[in-house]
Image 1 (cartoon, rainbow, N blue to C red):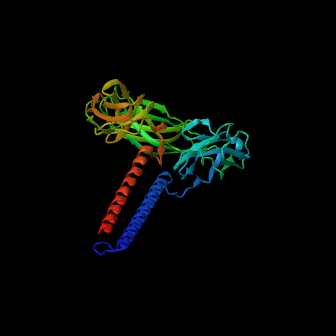
Image 2 (image 1 turned 60 degrees about the vertical axis):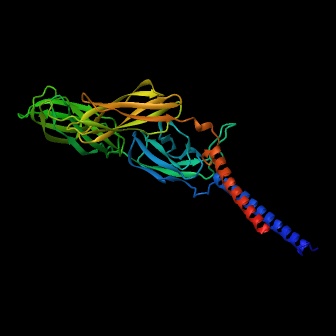
Image 3 (image 1 turned 135 degrees about the horizontal axis):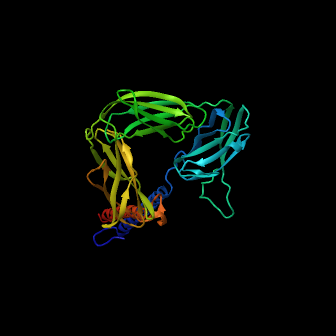
Length: 438
């Protein structure tokens, strides 16, 4: 058909229909791409790319050599969980030495454990306590520790994927002998000059190299210029397990001593057997000789407390003085601007020229804005105040999450992507109409 102007109307109509079909196809294609993109985005958010996932145990063998009958030994092994989900293990011990072995979670060494939970992407230390019977013969004994799927109580379930299907195992090898060795190495001994009224302190590290538990006794004997002993003390230390290292300390009162040179004889005994003896030439100076200076370097929050938990505040103290000093943190606790209590740390002796961290624990019973403000007290002096503020967040344990984030954040992300794709579709549609009209 030909119009007034000689144009072929049927051809124009066909052209318009073809353009409309192309526009429709483009719109459907873009809509499909948008749907595919949104689906892939959601899938990635809900199912992140899998990483190498493995579980393991280290070391594969725990050994006790030269073990003594009637003695107790402690070893540790680590369960490794590199998976993105927690694991639950049932632990059992078998073999000829099974009755000697008790297992504990390293977080609780008072209650024997036969089952452990290992959070995702973490390691868990297990303590192995081995008690050698008094009548055990001199020979090698072996027990096997097995970690397998948990034994569930009726009606009990575990999170999907948490129950392992592949077992882990390690051997406990014990060589029993009949010889008791009470031995130890003394290293890093420190004895410093002091002043009248401040204690004379001796500090050292002890390594139990024997095959029985050791209970060291540290002694200080102070002699004047004539060689006569004018003061002495002995301090019983805590028991040191086999093959472990511990710091030993002893103090001698100097409040009745006269200033001058002295000899401090430092000794260490194990059951009346002397394993260390060394004299140190020291000076006791007049009271007030040494400077006492300290600084509260920082006050920080070490955890992320939630309602009903405990906030761990760390006070960093630096002893910039010339003598060892006993230091403690004291402060006030505020919530939403109101004073609700006080906070304090244990007293710690800080060596001259060194620093330490004092731990302060604060109950946070409810949501709110908290502030801890305080100072360090040391040798009758105080540092300047410092403060740390923190907000106890809402309890997120009941909030639904997707891929570790609140669901509303994921929804906003998806809607934003959809909005961008909609703008692209509309822009393409306008360009198609312009092309058709041209």
